[in-house]
Image (cartoon, rainbow, N blue to C red; front, side, top):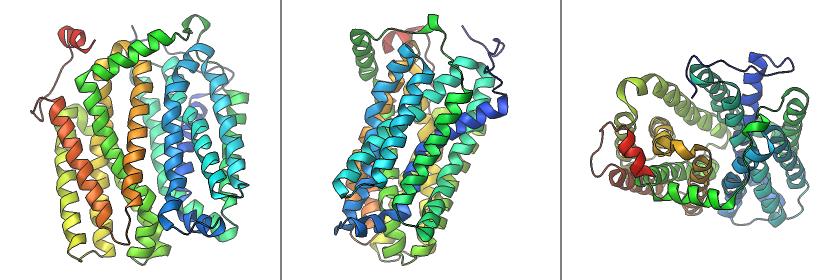
Length: 420
């Protein structure tokens, strides 16, 4: 058993604390940069590759999420069997290769295929860093490192659209993929030269399909875990709907194409602020009370924004204000939903995390794609999507909690037995 006082195993080969945190943050930021830097370039991609349907170019974002989500089931067991370092390097190698292939893609179909496989590679940088930190640190020190790395990770969506727009001003859209490939290659070299293997040989687990399938079944049967991962999926689906259609909304509906990076940065900042505030409030208020209140406010803001948009009173300022409020509620609720989904899964944490990540991202990508594809030149479809996602989230949360919100919940021996 590890405790806050458990001895730490600092990284070897001279990889000090600051460098270790920086490397973990860079790995975590890779996926966010790969998504948000694309957004200002979607019109140029569509024009260059002959995509007449503006909504169809959103698939550049959607297929990436599907690639990341599908690979969630793969990297966890592989990293437990073969070690963190080799699996991470393979994933990063796939990311670099398919980034270059996307940059050279002569057709939209090939670009989408390369983009999906780029997501498969990037999934390694989403999953394995948490395992590396867990291998080396325990208790509060582990939480400290993940918090510091997350601060850098949360900054990525704020700066990525501006970076993508800057590249477009200086060159053409393939150079964005080239820049991502260079970033991925730099991180690969950093890992290869400086990061030791963190999984001890005696801790490696054989890949047993029967055991993995049984663990997946256990995770799927637990009402609390399944409902809360579906809740997270619905909320993130609304987020993906915003991401995929945000450039069109700001440029076409609001008539401010040059302001897109600023609008996206403001909205992303509210998620970051909410996440930092959550870390301070959750110990005092509890996950359920905090996330349930945030969910109810989320639904109310979505309903208000839909009323504003449907009545023809949408303005640039109102959109930014109401969208930022929605993002703030998302930041308070979503992370807690993920934690509550894992709460009864301590006995199969690794496999459960892979299963839940798969369900969450695939479900969210499909929901978000449906919202994005419904864009009709107004903000109404997005807000209908947000409200529908909020109500679906509320429904599954009520199922998880047997109709009682705000109630603290402890998993003792009896609950753990029921969870199994």
